[in-house]
Length: 623
Image (cartoon, rainbow, N blue to C red):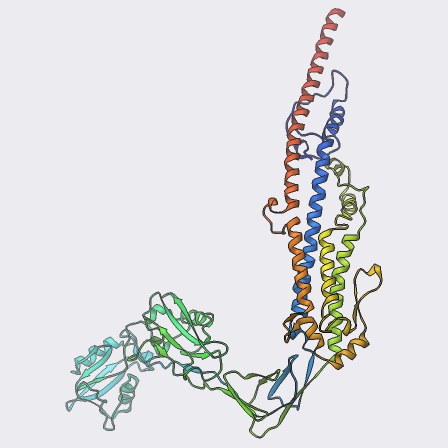
């Protein structure tokens, strides 16, 4: 209800004007405010009836949605808890005590398994191999050269030479010193090339110096020659500022000569039967660590780990792979994995990684050998997880038996869940209406405390869904699904000792005869699974599936009337359309009442003015 300046009070509850010139009745001596309140209250009675109707429909809509919440929770919960065959897997496993195999039994497990040997499947791993590469601006100290005043003694064509160096020299400054000594050294095709017949002197420090630079020495002290005649080369130089031997997790990819780009990584799927290819995008500002994180989260089935400057790639799936291949790279235009040391500098940027350790596992059970990539085997309804290798000639026996007590407890759980739902729904359809408690008007609320309003509305909301056809139809469908199930096959709830209560006041609650249920399970342990989850031999759905369908249909029917909690338009469901129509009528009434109130105020104003004028004229004659 509209109020003056938004204030709810007994004197302003029936005012619809935001601004008006009030006449206090000083001239006439009348209590105009009180008179106006009574007049507008009478004029507002029709609109208040519309507001009360709207409130009832809103309450009914909300009550319907509460029912749908209960039905949705029920149908989802019973399927997850009782609608799958695994839900009724109450079998226990007997193992001869070996800690090398963990065995669980599904509901279909039967018979005895004897395991006589097993080998573990292992994952393939590849580790990068980094050359002792360096940049031309890198200091000699980075190669482990610690001397501040060292000497490199050698001979060129029989002439003795000495080059003095310091750990602070760079590769470039060393080349200059070698050239000054006549060694004809230069960086060529990424290699340090010396075109001279050099023989290192016997001094051990000179040999160590040559080795640290990557040169190999012959027995007579000569540097090893390569195919370029007299040219002798050391390890490859790179044009970046980082030494691969000093690769760190914090190194940026730009330091490896990489720019923004992508590559495609391939690994095995979870079963090891196919490859997964994932494209990974990287930026030059990424670090090696963040690149490895992208590999691990890519879903390619590969895990990258870094320790020091070493990186290992391991397949997430154990086994020998496909045609001996476990993981690799299909596209890598910038040679990311070559720069990280997984491919040689002379080789291709792509291909399968040369992994080690990848092999399938094997299990010999009941005289039959099974080989596969996983260490988990499914045999005759048993799930066997091999945790350690089992030596040939062993004898590990696996058997199973049904746990009748667990099954009974599970059945009782289901009955409690079902009975809880129908009790709630039956309460709503049988709840008595309180005809003496209508929705409160704004004026009535203005004169009550919050506690009084809450208590009143609890009574006013009672019985809104009394006798509701949608809910009664849902209850009837569920009762039918339970009572008629298995009539042709004999797989009925009654055969398990589960029946409907004969008490009329129980409204279809289920009861269980535990003794009968126990005997039925001892005779046929799979009966509960068939009845609740369905019979695979006949294709008939189980009672859980039928109950779920009944609940889902009820939800859909109720949504036609009450919509969803997420509905954005009241026009999309029947109660919403009614509420919308009433809202429009109420708004029209408010506009009409504003005009009526304004007219009354004008009339009272005119009356006060006329009385004042008459009083003035009387005073003139009195003089």
